[in-house]
Structures are given as C-alpha cells and as structure tokens.
Image (cartoon, rainbow, N blue to C red; front, side, top):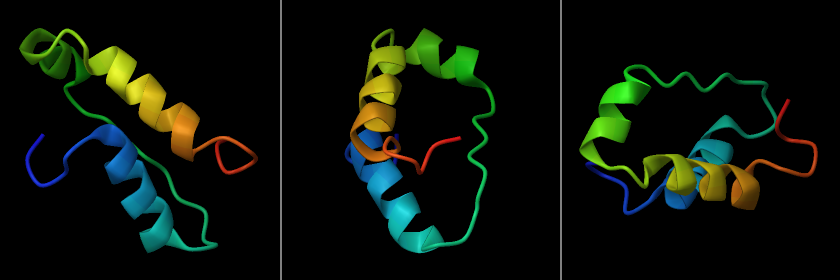
Length: 58
C-alpha cells in the first residue's frame, strides 16, 4: 500500500478527512490485494475495528 503505513492509518486519515459528513469506502480489486499479501484481510479487519466502530461504521 503506497502512501500509508497501514490500514489503521488510512482509516484514521479517512475519518479526519470526512469530518462529520457521511461517506462510503469502496475497495476495488480486493482479490488482487489478497493475492499480493495474504495478511491483507486481517490488516483490513484490524483497521476497521480500531477506527470505524462505535457508530461511525454502518
């Protein structure tokens, strides 16, 4: 993932950017990411759990 050290950082930056506005995250070519890095599903889940829970994820 170029530009972000990990998924948690990406989600934190996304939340900072969107502020109080509603927004959608779309992941294109996810199977390709999994093929490149088998741990991507765990990383993605950890980032989601750490940053997008508590009412901000719907």
